[in-house]
Image 1 (cartoon, rainbow, N blue to C red):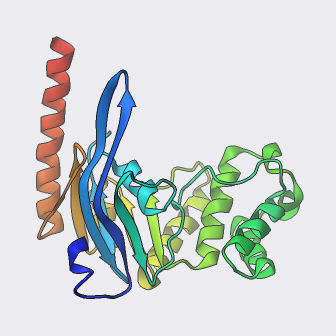
Image 2: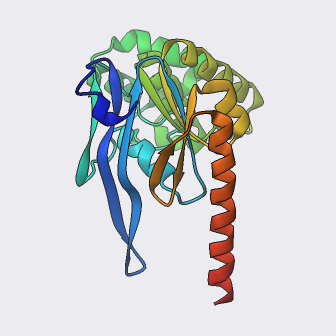
Length: 242
């Protein structure tokens, strides 16, 4: 579905319309996203595939409303949207873990005691829940933010690539949790892992040099992605040899 179709067919949907993002890098203007049009309906799971530096993380941040575009708009009709699922930022390090969860739950109008209980059960914080966050490893922040997002039961979960954790038990539980989210929520997964896209997504888009293209099948999307990879590699080799 294109973003322009939303006006003619109102429904529960999140997406972008005409979004362009540019920033200054090494004294030159870089276009991270160019005229992005995307609409994701409730219950749909979408893969965003792209080479390094293609704009995947920027798209996920925009969709999560962490940033606002100067050109175009990001919309959500009848759906709540989570922060990026594996985020390592967004909590207040001078507060305890419990107070961080309570603050977030209240901010979104959720019952704080229930959210705290569910996060504690998932992360298994024990006595650490009443420690200041700045006394705990950065990986704990990621786990708490993941578990809090899941406990809040958002309608849509943007995901910027996949969890990387040395805690195998946590990683296994997190992966099973994402699979369960797929059955009840909308996912927008930015990753280059074909196996994940095929197992979790209904459709796939390719983001290359800030331009998003739709494809009839996931296999077709990955064929185009491999051509984009070759194009990027050739361009980098040319710059290195210049």
